[in-house]
Length: 94
Image (cartoon, rainbow, N blue to C red):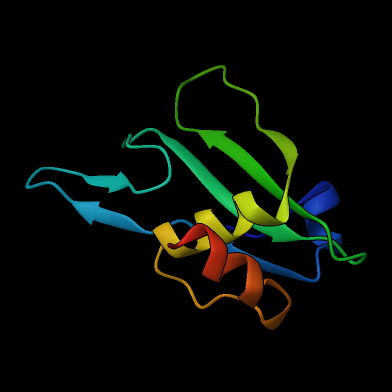
């Protein structure tokens, strides 16, 4: 899916990781087949998560997250952590 609105201006983004449960792809970030998350880094270096859903009538939303939360999200989704989060990632993974 192509980013829209504020996400179009993000300097980087990471899609959620999913796992096959035998029937459906399940989001590692949300534990749901219907609810999804994408992590973004703004042009100013702040991180935020966009929440989307396949439920009819749902509205996407976004929230700023701390560097620690961003590092946890990236590690849980098995993404490489950007250099600026290396120290934080070491602390949250212990």
